[in-house]
Image 1 (cartoon, rainbow, N blue to C red):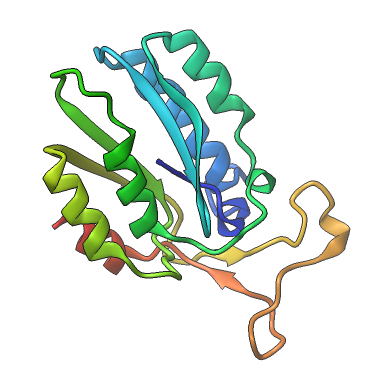
Image 2 (image 1 turned 90 degrees about the vertical axis):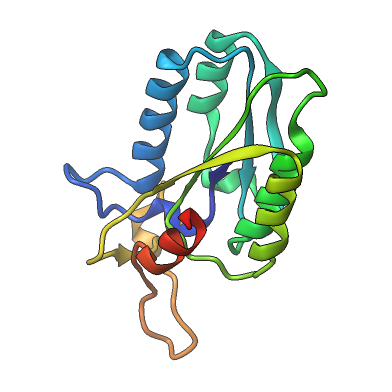
Length: 174
């Protein structure tokens, strides 16, 4: 389950990479190294979309991973709880061990976290969370492909600063 909210465009990763760049690289490595029967990809922001249904084809999963961009989701925000709920429903009925890898900066704007975690427990799924971003954070670009458009503004008209929400990451990990 990959967070593709606008905050994932922040370039606070060493080497000037965006959070999404690092997330996609991490997914590529995990898919290649995993000894899993099937892999699928859900992307989420304010809503959730199944980007790749469960498949045993790791090469296809790597291709689909590279295609992920934050502009795939018109309803922005970050709804981690809904992503977890949909992840629990995403599994096939086959008797495989179930694992959800959640990749996010932890900026949850929608709630529903308790419901999402309960649905994973009911599906007998394990959760691994990968928090991405830095404590220092960075500005959220309006359009990551056109820097001249500037940065998103907060409710006070100041450039929006996005940081890794370590508290949320820790809460989910518990």
